[in-house]
Amino acid sequence: MPVDFKLYLITDRKQIKMPLPEAVRLALSGGVRAIQVREKDLPVRELLSLSRELRVLTKEFGAKLFINDQVDIAVAVEADGIHLGHQSMPASAVRKIVGNKMTIGVSTHNIEEARAAEAEGADFITFGPIFETPSKQKMGNPVGLEAIKDVKRAINIPIFALGGIHGRNIGHVLWAGAYGVSMISAIFGAEDIKKKAKNITEMIKIVDRSICVECGRR
Image (cartoon, rainbow, N blue to C red):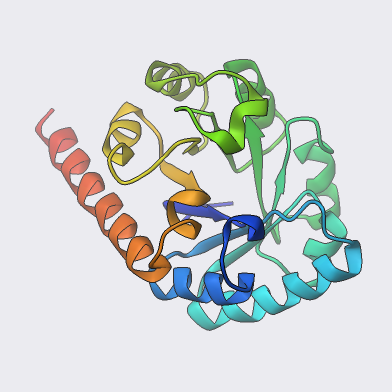
């Protein structure tokens, strides 16, 4: 399915100083149009309740809602998509459950996983960590910008750069070939979530325009 957003915001309520729905509303008010609910430690009933609340919020703003790994919850709340880990149920199996009603994203960390995700029917991937980041230390060392270029040449689906992405390096990852960026703390860890979200969404638009101009000259 087509991917019509450039900023993919992942939740982590432990990094937020307010209730998660309030923080999500601020991010949406700032222009974010895709939210992934990733609260792995929540009991199923609590996660379902939270996802329902965020489904209402995202619909209010015309934004997409993705649920991490829990296909049953994604179906129950009529989410727009499901996000899978590279060791989760394959995208091909999830597609048999959800059909073409949902967009499927897959987390990847190297070119082999990226190729496998595309072959299994993923609509897009997150790829990283690109830069050093505490939240992704367990995923290994940063892969760097050159890895984005390599994956871009290897697959045809959108790549969302993940890991240590912030306002100062967005341009670098987009110029390297990433379709968009995925974040957690850069927005949810900000003092002013709405302002930060607005600044980042505007920055992505500016970089995209400059890339389009440069491509038009070639």
